[in-house]
Image 1 (cartoon, rainbow, N blue to C red):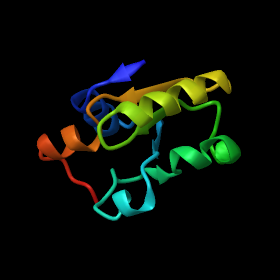
Image 2 (image 1 turned 90 degrees about the vertical axis):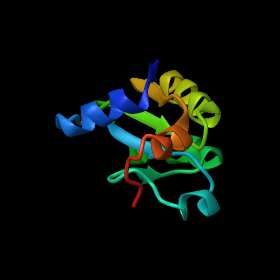
Image 3 (image 1 turned 135 degrees about the horizontal axis):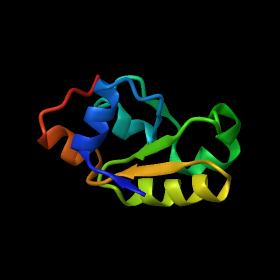
Image 4 (image 1 turned 180 degrees about the vertical axis):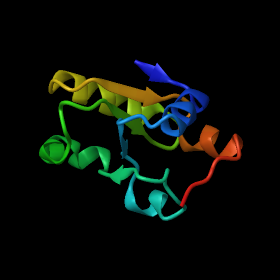
Length: 100
């Protein structure tokens, strides 16, 4: 399932309990992440699923939306309710939203 940058921004503003997982590589997250996001590179996701709460939805985020779509598929297969943020951090930045 997909969420736009605006939909995620609105959910966060309204107190969503979604877990944001940034699946980019370490060098990419050095430029900043969405506040409250957890960094789990896509290649490590399968071995780190235990760090996530299956009772809460997960929003996967990457640079452009491709890796996060793969992450959301992997999370869904593991029993999570998962979303991908379309457009990734490129769209987040283009919308002028903060990345700390």
